Image 1 (tube, rainbow, N blue to C red):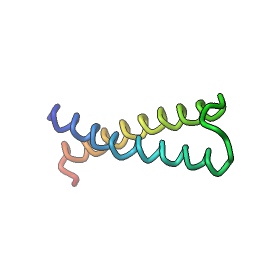
Image 2: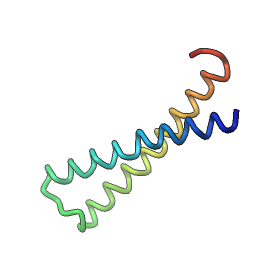
Image 3: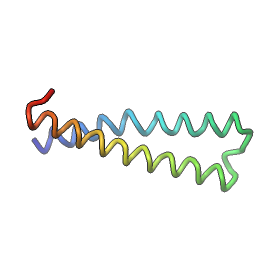
Image 4: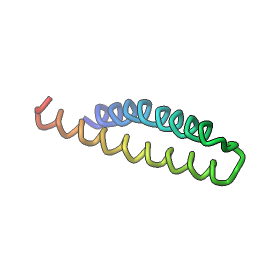
Length: 71
């Protein structure tokens, strides 16, 4: 079960992290901010950490569903 849990978390991370980074960079592009500006770097960092938290939460939720048999 530990391996299943790790695989689920990895799968969610592969889904959430690139999606959030693409969205944050596209928002910076539409706002006209350069990536080298401090505000831009902060926005990308915040979205990255938010994606990690969402990935962890969704991975744990899916693990609990599988463990209890509610698929």
